[in-house]
Length: 230
Image (cartoon, rainbow, N blue to C red; front, side, top):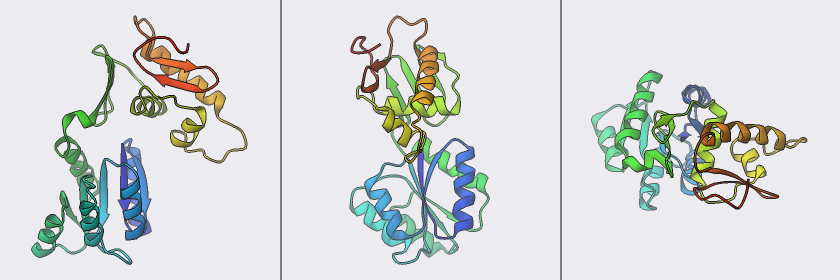
């Protein structure tokens, strides 16, 4: 799950990002209001952590502009200002929660998890293809009601395939979006193929219908029907 952190204090941004990554989240950090607005407007995130005191356009301006554009991603506002009027203004502009600095990371994490549970329809928090199900909050994966144990990278790979269900995913896409390796002298094709093989065994072994298919010369596709690959 992707979380956008809009925070201009490098130490605070790094602390939040590192803590969330340790909990299995994928984070993107923006150091200014303009950068945060661009990221939130052009990419998909499950949560936005937004500082109010930002250079240039402040957090409330950014929040108001995002809501005006129809961006309904849940937002947790961070601020050193903890007055009632400040909280009311933030909530009136469309914030979903409000956390005053300094704060303990476990509290921020608890609020993020709470928003993920209640802030969006339940089906947004789960991915399903046929009888394969992924819970994006608990990171649990099951097929036909039977739990599948995955490594962190296998989970990220499967999540990507499920989000692109029915679409051909190339090795270049996986290298860039899952392995975050857009610039490498040596391609990651062999590494990707090994992970696909391991993931296919866990997801498809012993099942009547295969879900993970190789499309020769192109890449991979996750789909219910057989055929079109191996």
